[in-house]
Image (tube, rainbow, N blue to C red; front, side, top):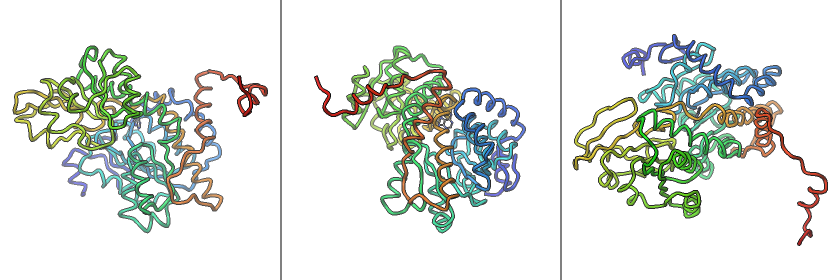
Length: 436
Ligand code: ADE
């Protein structure tokens, strides 16, 4: 894509090889947002304090493809302070905060991202590969996939390793590994307990409701709130919706996840059943076509539909278009479709992840732990490389000690103390012949 075309789409802050952002003059606003996030991310600040002294990343280039938010800014600033040269693109067309992108570009990050980047998404990713990064940091595998598909030799021979932030991305990586098509080691950051148990549940729970409220200002109390998928993310959304007074309905394919929903106080139904009674629908499954034609046709007038999964495939929008006679934008991130049967359905954020497209993503406090895991996983890769060693080309679990370190540091920052088991208690739990 050429620069004049970018200008035509309203993108004009560009310096070749350095950045392409919406408007570099937003930098001061973005800096304030990041300064605020720093005050909520004590684990990251501790890591920054420690590793800015030793600069373990000196001489290493990192390319990241992850939502450009104020929290991501803190991860990037910390990697830079620890010596890394950083290049970045957004991992979703609707999740970049343009002010943060501008501030990071002004701080020397190779930043290629803007809100609304549908057409140049892969162009941006490729600009972060141009400098030949040693490491990749993904959220959803688009960077890893691009490196593997378009730069195969480089992926095989030059990349030291990478990390993956999200459930969907880790699934894709495991498929790649099973097919023998994974060319460098990748840490599954998503699978760290201090990531999924907090970020996926509490982060998604709060930020999803935040996105729905910002896009609609609708009252949640008394509404039938349908959550498709009761995994970590869906269960967080369901619990928070319940807390706001909604009657929560879960749709699931997995019996155990459905039972958890029931015991959390929700109803379980099929989507065919839920479509007829739901007021608000939110998908959190990672699977495509969860809400489709047969559901739109039976929904109530005024139903609100949105998605909080990584990709925009969970709501079948072409089928929504096919049953509609007209469409208009009601307010940002809220489009009204009028169906042939006269009913209106409101689609939020074009079916893209509502928490980042319409709100600010997960709060800084949870991203603090997720991004500490990202930073430490990259540190593991670099330290191994510095020692002349390499991990095997596989999806690698986050070490248990790292998980515990992140949890302990977070707890300390909250000024909370833990009990310690006595020698006698330890011997009691570890013995096999203690009984009644
Ligand atoms: N994913 C969800 N919330 C996020 C945030 N605040 N920053 C980066 N990635 C996210």
